[in-house]
Length: 345
Image 1 (cartoon, one colour):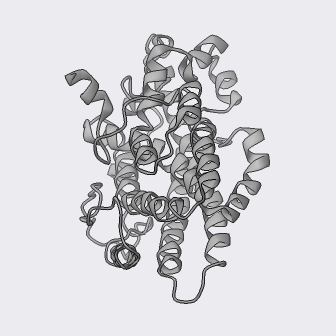
Image 2 (cartoon, helix red, strand yellow):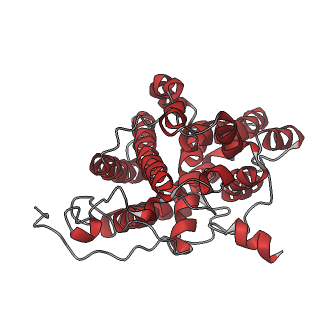
């Protein structure tokens, strides 16, 4: 039965909240920003079992729905000629499985984020405004976990989520919270690629199953706060580091970004086996072909902008950005569409 508590769906706004210039806030301005973000979490939040009418006929998941076909513009596998040449039925099956597995990976990452953030807030002094906001964010991430798992369950796809090596090591990732700057770089490494992809497909008006669109709209709306906080947290705390600490952070930054992006975006080997995807196709799609490399680099425009603002670009780190395949022009503003900017140029 549809939940009796269903409320009128809130419009999904995925723009960054109306906040002051964030480049260099004073301590008082930072405290006020956190208050604004906390109030936003109270006044504008979503519940997956209230704001998604899972049992609505419009949201019923049809495994034969052609709208599961992967985007040829924004998905690395969807952009590959091998995938595009497959029969529609196979493209649909692969697309549904990939979306379900992406949701499973997303909820696993949210779990890591919660564990690390919980460790961090337990070190904060009484009266810290970061404590309250982080608790709000963790509450929202718990809702995202429920939302993603409900989607997985309703697809009927028994997807594994992360690769085995990442599942084995993920419980240790939260320990990075002992160095908060590195932990929140990791937070952005997980959040930015997913947010970038979801914004692009929603903004471009790509046809997709309605329940998937609704999930993306909710996720985008709340991630705007989470990403805004992580950016400002790093602005606040990287400047407290010594010169040596900033050097270490500058080196770790692109490495963390690339490692966690690979863990989240690259599907597990079982997908290739299940659908008979040739090894060379998987290699080219993730991320050896020029088009897939372009998609990968586009994920990181906003964090390249942040790295420059934080003074974390130097001759050593610049080499690592290039070696990791995630270098490129930094965004001029949060959420800039690099593909369209490149086309216009």
